[in-house]
Amino acid sequence: MTDESESEGAKPATRCGFVALIGAPNVGKSTLVNALVGSKVTIVSRKVQTTRALIRGIVIENNAQIILVDTPGIFAPKRRLDRAMVSTAWSGAHDADLVCVLLDAKAGLDEEADAILSKLATVQHPKILVLNKIDLIPREKLLALAKAANDRMKFENTFMISALSGDGVDDLRQTLASMVPPGPFHYPEDQMSDAPMRHLAAEITREKIYRQLHQELPYQSTVETDSWTERKDKSIRIEQTIFVERESQRKIVLGKGGATIKSIGADSRKEIAEIMGVAVHLFLFVKVRENWGDDPDRYREMGLEFPKE
Image 1 (cartoon, one colour):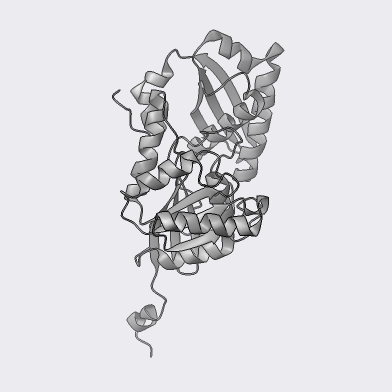
Image 2 (spheres, helix red, strand yellow; image 1 turned 45 degrees about the vertical axis):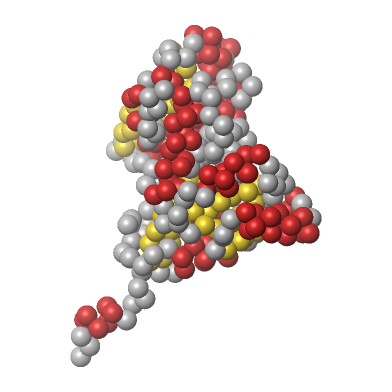
């Protein structure tokens, strides 16, 4: 007869840890999170600054659970919202067990990358260098970039990947799994992301606004999920409000005869339904909330600290 504690002890010890993804805007952090997790958990947009809060993706690899902290891109902040996002990104790096530094291989060690490496000197955790978009430049340039970055700072590992195609992502995932500290899992194994579905649904709608209105509506919008009701037929009814700062922006979001908001709603509903696996009924409203960028409550809702200045 086998002692139960002995059979339990035969299982491989679990590992679990937080991995912060740090990088300039548009280096591919959100795409990498989605590639590592294998499902869409953070919004991906060509516009910079689409990730406002520390949305986490959760990866199970062998006996390890990797919790990815997808920080806002680090850039030179101008407005209060910008300062809040940059502050949040750095707090994510300081609080994590490991830090993945993403560089755009094509951009190389540009001004933004240089500033990030300089400030990373204050972060004590082990760091991994990830060169993304490697399909865009010749191999000899890649090797030179890897050497230049490693000369600047001690990295435990260097990876060359394409987050978009998935090239090199499996190797990175396995290494992260081996480097997170021993310990029990923080989240149930079937949980992809700890971002609540209401928040993710709002992020998806916000992405659709960017896709359609990136010229006319630069950043002066936020989306909140007001209600989320599961109906008897298992479908979900969602009501969301899109907040803008001026009446002229409200008209842009609505479009002629409501055509723009209908199109945004249709795209968002389709994607939310795909993720949830059930029918979704989405109702969008547009309201003017002047100076929402200076409202502390909005920052708390987005998981950001409100900068005093």
